[in-house]
Each structure stands twice: as C-alpha cells, then as structure tokens.
Amino acid sequence: MDFLIGGVAGAGASFFTNPMDVIKTRLQLQGELKAPDSYKVRYRGFLHAIYVITKMDGITALQSGLTPALLLGFSLNFVRLGLYRKVERLGWINDENGGTSVWKAAFLASVSGGLSGITATPSFVVKARDSFKKEPGLDRFDEHYGGGAGTC
Image (cartoon, rainbow, N blue to C red; front, side, top):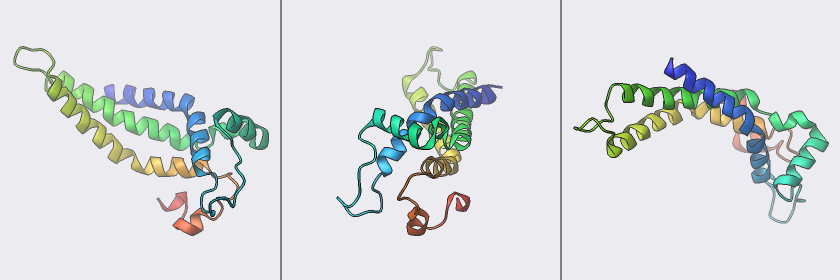
C-alpha cells in the first residue's frame, strides 16, 4: 500500500507542477537548433511565457505533456517512497540503540532514489518531448536528433 500511496502522491504533485515545467522547457528550448542571434526571443521570462503560451496556444497548453508527467510522478515516487518506507519498517535504517542512523538512512534513500530514477527515465524523455510539441522552430528537433516520442 505504501508504494501505491507514494505513486498517487507523486502524480498529484505533478498535476500542479506540470505548468511550471512546460514553461521551463519552452524557455530552455527557444532558439534551439538555430545559429546564435538568428532567432527572435519569444519568451522574455517566466511570466511573459505564461502570457504568450496562454494567448497563442490556450490555457490547456500549460498542461501539455500532462499524461507523461503524471506517469513520471507516479513511477518516481512509487519506487522512491514505497521502497524507503519498506526498508524503514524493516528497521534497516536503525542504529544499535533503535534510533535512526543518518548514514544508513542517507544510503538507503540514495538507493531508492536511484532505482526510481532508473525506472522513470523513459517517462522523463516522453514528458520533455511532449512539453515542446507546439513550440515553433522545433519541428526539426526529431530530424536533428532522430525519432520522436514514439521511439523511446
């Protein structure tokens, strides 16, 4: 049950943070694949990007890539939080006195985080590609890097 609760919590958080990630991705990718100084800056900052995206693509564009974002949030936290809670219940993070060992907890948190990153990597790729589908000038991205989200 801990795994499921961790996954649902991650997916819920992703719903609220996805618009910020879409904006961040579009800000990072503006002018990508173009020579320096050969493109017009479309977004002057975070707030301006919100304005331009909602004006040009509609408010729902802020949630582009939501399905892979939910999958990403679920898969990351399903493994990370579920596994950590499991080792915590088994007492693997306790020291000889029954208290929490910082070193054991840090190590096992790193292991669970690493495993969650491995399992969620395909979702990262799909989410990033979904976030900029409508971004002008990036139609050559698949041509340049090969394939599309379906090739992950």
